[in-house]
Length: 303
Ligand code: GLV
Ligand code: MG
Image (cartoon, rainbow, N blue to C red; front, side):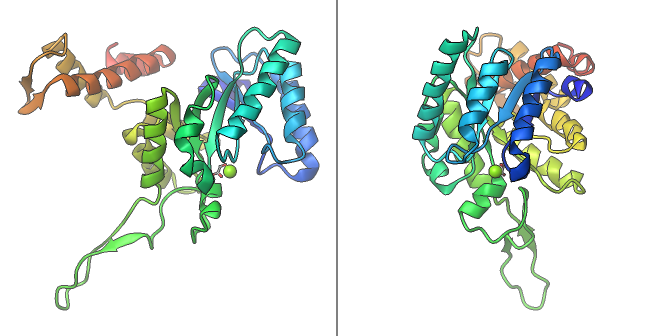
């Protein structure tokens, strides 16, 4: 566990789905014990509690915050339908922080995984100053929407476009991204609210390429990270969510060519202006953030 913590930005103790009903209490106790003992250094400590309408949520919140509130950074709240769910947890946390004399506020990370939640995503994003961000939960969202799939994230071979018929020639098909709409909607809601969007789980551990493709689409569209359900996915996530050194080098060129972002210049035949300067800043700032945790990447970025 201490080794896993060193390799990741965040370590999350899951109490919700995938934990059998008869193991719910033991999982909570185990998380509290682990949180008390382990030194997490700069790695964030999160827990995914059970849904607010479940018989375990109240004890999850009160016992964990009471016992290890000062070590806990973020509570991940599943199946958020609207801002009312965030308000409930926000008030409860305020009571517990006062009661146990916590030194800093516990933040809230919502999982976007119900059709109603997607409808209310903007209100959820701005529901509380505790909002850290949100993650797309493709498995529950698929169920909530009655999508006809049996997967945890990723594409589906039958979700595709078909080229027009041209005589007897075989018709080209191209698989489309089932999650494009939701990720875009989530990223806009989060960016507008100044909180962090994440892609959630990818369930097929045997398909590293598909996991990487799903993570990369999310990264390119504005997400800051993804979950790792299996140790093998930590390296995939690190690779994808650390910007490409070639892109970072080009971003540097843009900023060096127009230090204050004003006017327009040409670089390698491509027009640069205020807007590309701002894009370059996003990549450079992210490269600097990655560099603070990863000396090898720092060297490749030259920052
Ligand atoms: C995650 O919780 C999901 O349902 O995809
Ligand atoms: Mg879920």
